[in-house]
Image 1 (cartoon, protein in one colour):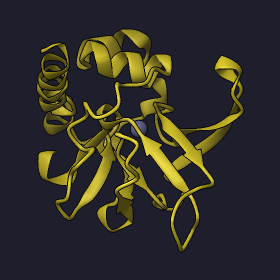
Image 2 (cartoon, protein in one colour):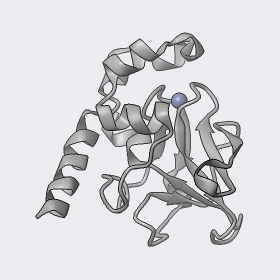
Image 3 (cartoon, protein in one colour):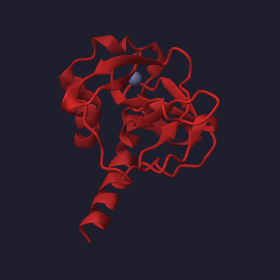
Amino acid sequence: MFNIFRKTEAKETQDKIGSHLSKIDYEKIDWSKKDENYWKEVMTPLQYHVTREKGTERAFTGKYNEEKRPGVFHCSSCGQKLFNSVTKFDSGTGWPSFYDAIPESVTLHEDNAWGMSRVEVVCSRCGSHLGHVFDDGPAPTGKRYCMNSVSLVHSDDL
Ligand SMILES: [Zn+2]
């Protein structure tokens, strides 16, 4: 019962995510000037925790884990295009996974939190935390971009 509740909660949360982008011309905004108060106002609590506090949503709870629609996945904070659906694959991890990012859309940082050596992936435009990238992905890149669903919004949902 608890798990079912969590899954429903995550999906309902996701439906609100990115709604602030529908009212604005997100390509013409200087996103680097937005402060924490702005993000708190436009984001859901889970989205804020993941994207601004480098949190991680629970596996298998995100709306886009099993997403199959063709399109583009945008940053749910600033609307920048991040991943094309053709690079999405089923990693079995419970998080939306891609083998490549759209060129220049993400920045990589060394992340040694929690006693693990990982590579953090952030949006190159607004700095939102998206997830991590690993070297065990499929061809042609061998990369696995392991993303939080709440950090993304599908082009059909924008
Ligand atoms: Zn962004």
